[in-house]
Image (tube, rainbow, N blue to C red; front, side, top):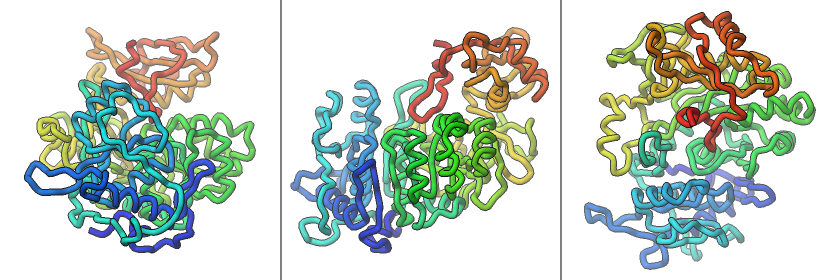
Length: 504
């Protein structure tokens, strides 16, 4: 297998070319090579303050290393250094509580933790050897001895162990092989016409797939550059897109803030209009935000779809049809099918042909760490069960209708996706945010429940008004039978609504 970073290892990028920027701090490719090289050398040095563990089969080899994944240069350098050394990286969410951190550390058993100097770590990590990441200064190699890069030749070797949110138990560690990282980044580069000339701007967290693998490793694999905002704000987006950035990555919450800011922010309008590519992911972008952004700027927002275990699965292509409300078509190398409750493949198209998405391809994880039972349950042969429900149109475009566990509502003999009802509710001028769930009903099996954040809390739209709004636009059986009013919807760090918390 070739390097994950040919611009660093093969020297394809000019050493003086910008690579990473976080606020006022930046590294060019030469400086990144040196800083990541120092990390790689330390991780692979026997007896030199770097972790090295004997594997269960008795073979020597680098063990895992945790990374305290703050939005910083040190995090990016630590991850690149670990991957160049062939050491699997375990990103840790700095917002995690002590019990969750303790579980992740006990489960993944890292030999140390890479962290920015001076950062205070929580008590749950006190037992790990601390390895401070220095990014100041230039100079090549490690102690002048040449490249310390020992990337595995085997593309099935693990690159990451990324922990997924636990819904019925503690988080599970998805082992992501190097081939999945390379395959996904090359597939999205094909779909988005992504080159080394692109400059990406985003403000995503760096402990998960979207911000870290796509948002940091993606530009570096292409030989391009990334500017991280540290913390997302619309002024920062406008500043970077008007000073050379060509691409923007975000989640729906970010694009919603952008859409709301556009009427009073002409600089932001101009900045977005000049961008080459706007990409949204991690959750569905409401249609009304699509429309507001496109109307104001003339630019469409491309949606893509993926998850921790699969990395990227589908995307709207830069050269394809707009497809608002869809997540596009399968990426190169990815096979996708929809299956019904019996496991039979669904070949029909249209809004009523709802099925679970199953995928296979080089983008898949290999296992849940230490969980052979969960790994086996996640697959149907070599097809991974995503748990996401979707429909397809005749052109192959996929539209997600929700999670099988929380978003597929069986009411009155119909299978109803929560997503289309949520989008329809958001078209009502009295609705600022909306989520839809099902609850038991003696007559219907399940009844549709809407959770609404009113645009004007003093005069919220009535249940009857919202039910009529949905029935007129979709179908009577899709109307909400119950409406709850909230000040805000509970969301996680990626902007996804946490539906299991709505009842609380």
